[in-house]
Amino acid sequence: MKIFKLLIPAVLVTVSLSSCLKNKFDQMNPDGSPSVIEFANPSAPSSETPGGSAFTVFPVSYLSATSTEASYKIQLSGPEPAAQDIIVNVGVRSDAVTKLNDEKKIISSYVPYVELPSSLYTITTPTVTIPAGQRSASVKVAFKTSSFDFSKKYALPIAITSTSFGSPSGNFGTILLNVTAKNEWDGIYSVSSGVVTRYTAPGVPAGDALSGNLAGNPDITATSINGTTVELTNLRWAGGSSAVSGIENLRATINPATNQVTMTSGVNPTLRNIPGKDNKYDPATKTFTLNFDWNQTSTPREMTLVIKYKGSR
Image (cartoon, rainbow, N blue to C red; front, side):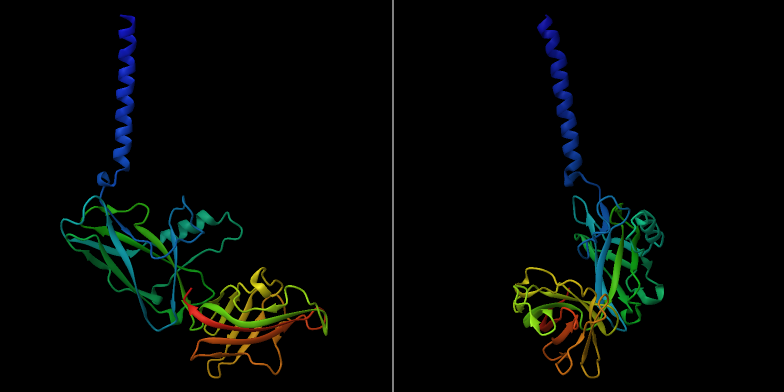
């Protein structure tokens, strides 16, 4: 009898655990999930908004133009495609930018986002339809990127304001688009050729392993600073093993009328074009030919660099 009495609680515990596990499995099963409407990721999320942030920021960039139209997917997440047409209304949620900035202001290095002014964009399809039997539709936004202030860190807080079926997602019903304008020289460039020479003193070559051929070094990124200037990053010494330091904020300013280039560094005022050598951009091949030096009177460094456009960043 005692054995029987002991078995009854054990069986009840087993049944209870089995029931709990079943319920937990059902909650994780997508076939049992509610129908929600959300934005699909338009890009990789910004590292500034890891898990736990109130809103997710997605960096997007477009060429500078009077009007540039972009599309963003809205999707139905749930067990089945839409059984009927789903009408989705889209607008902006201004408080999202404020909330994110308030959340991040404890980080000393954080630069607050500025809501993209309404004069710089138009949601051209504020109402879209997810057709019956399907799962997605596209929202279109036209940006006036030629009027962007390159110094501003813009965010467009685009939001699903209402839907005729299901409900807006709590996580991705509102997203922040970190929209930036790109000039025509912005992008990723491969290193076609080049040579760097280091000196221990003027006229005295160092002859070290960091001097030599640059061909085949890792790609260089050109990021728009304004309408005619790009910042070049990931510059390496010969062999590509280590980064060139002491000339951070390396910038190339292009004269659109002549395609001549002026090289400068934001941290090293000695960096300059080498007199008598080419510093130019070839629009036909999208290639920069650069010759610049720095530290001319102490430990000179001279660099010849030819980089060719590879693709957008």
